[in-house]
Each structure stands twice: as structure tokens, then as C-alpha cells.
Image 1 (cartoon, rainbow, N blue to C red):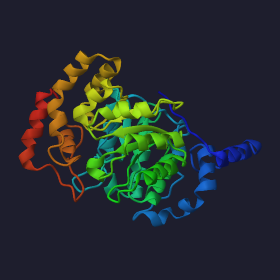
Image 2 (cartoon, rainbow, N blue to C red; image 1 turned 90 degrees about the vertical axis):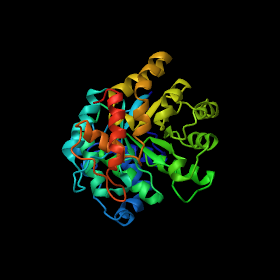
Image 3 (cartoon, helix red, strand yellow; image 1 turned 120 degrees about the horizontal axis):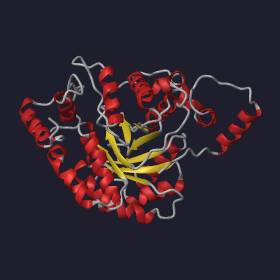
Image 4 (tube, rainbow, N blue to C red; image 1 turned 30 degrees about the vertical axis):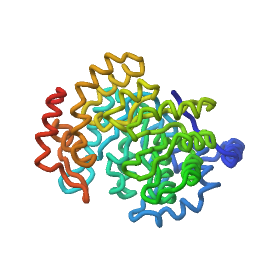
Length: 371
């Protein structure tokens, strides 16, 4: 199921100018002139103040040109199994780029349907803007045009969300995953304003609802209102574990020109979520079992309940025990145990998996045939 950019009036005017001045060549952003013009006309202040928004700023707008001829293209996000990718690190806490490249190639080989990078599982809140840019550059180099790149850009401060989304655009990514702002508990009208404002930046947006972490539950009616207000809102990651949300959201959005993509964010209920009419999952389990997750979700999308259950049942212990401590602690240890990364290091205040849980996770991996 495809999605597309939705330029506003300012963008249309800028596009006209660009076409009239066909000799014009910015030669900087590497992204479409449409999106760049929209930012110039609507977000000049946001760009000029980016360095003030986050503790470690980075220069945006120069990365994508050198990464390939397809960086200007938006690769539609789609139904299927999207991995909530970890960020591999060395034992000293630096980004482990060789392991990151190995993981990305692992997902290409395993037919993973989407990469969700720099989300909760990727320890995004513990990364600087420079580190984010370096990670996104590697992802674009390795998988752009082969697997859609969905980037977590959510934060408590809307200015930080804007800065991260603009960076994702300039790096050549395909969509943003924006969580409900945690802790401050905005009202429904504030959530609608937040998501539509971010969608206006020009990158297709997936709303992320995870009240267990944010203390904010964006209800189906609020999701529907936001989606009706801005066509750049293209999907929802629903992590409540309540599969009835699928029918609730569907019933309120039947008149949308393009149906929302509905992803489960709860590994233990994702099969039922898809069988109820969802489009796929954004999965932690897919870090260690990407091929099986793809096969299971494809079976569920076909309506093959028996095959989906057969595959999912064998992964049940992984779904459970990969959360024996806070995500992504067990997932990173599991990946190190199966030899996909060199270290299970997590940045403070997270820690590496406690020794008492090593046997728990190893047993889950063995029981699922992953060791």
C-alpha cells in the first residue's frame, strides 16, 4: 500500500518557481526541492535554531547527495513485518557501525518489510543529533530503495521533533514515527495539532501510541480526527495490546482516500491484530527472527490462521522473554548471543542484561530454534 508526499500551497508555489527557473540547482539537501522549499517557506526559524534545540547539534542538509541516486525518492511504507531495530554499540558505548551494516543486510536477506530505526528499541533518546545523522546515513546507504526506512522522531518538545524530522528528510528517509509526547499528557486537541503540524513538514507520518511508556493514550477518535485533517498522516503503530483498536480505527476512517496502515506494536498480540484487519507489526522479536516474523505476518495477511499460529506459537517464548527486562536490554543480549552483534551494551541509565536473565533469554532462543 503506497503513500505519497502532500505538498501545501507554499510548496506548490515554490515548485512553480523551481520549474520556471529550470537552471536552478541547490546542490545541497539531496532531497526533493518540493520538501526543501516547504521548509524554507514554513520552517526557516526552525532550521536556523536547530542548534539550540538539542544538546549536540548536527549540520543537516548535506548528507543525502553522496549516498546514491535514489535518495530523493520516497519509498512507500507497506504492510508486513517492520523491525524495531536496535542500535548496536561497542563495549565502550560508541555506535558499532560494522554491526549496524550487518544487521541491515540481515534484514534484506530475511525479507523484512520495513526498518523502524531510532525508536525506543534503538535507544534514540540517548543519542545525539550527530549520532542520529551517522546512523541514518548508514541506513540509507545499505537499504534505501530496498526496504522502507521509518525513523523515530518523537520527543516531548515539538521543536525537537521538527529538528529530527527535518534531519530524516535531508538524510533521505521515507517516513517518520512520532510518539505521543510523553509525561505532559496533552489533551486530544493538542495531540491533533501536534501530529498535523509534524505531518506538514512533508514526511509521511505514522502515529505511535504506547501509553505504557508515555502515560498518554491517543484514542481512535483522536487518531481519526488527525488523519482527516492531514493526508500526510499515513499510519498508526498501536502498542496497547488491544486488538479491538483495529476495528475502532477502521470504522472511523472508512472515508479516507487512502486507508491508514495499522501496525501492532505489541509482539504478543500482533498475529491477532493482523487477523483482525491490521496491516502488520513493528516488532522487537523481528530483531532476532526476521524471516519467521515476515512469514508469520504474510500468513496472517492472507488470512491463513493455522499457518500464522504455527509460526507464531514457536516464537511465543521469544515474544515473552525478550521483555524480561526493559526493552532493548534483552534484545541486544539476544543478538549478541546469536552472533549478529559484538556486544549487548546499552547506554545508561539502561544496563546490559542482568546475569540472572541470561538463561531465560537463551532458553527462549533455543526453544524457538534460533540457537
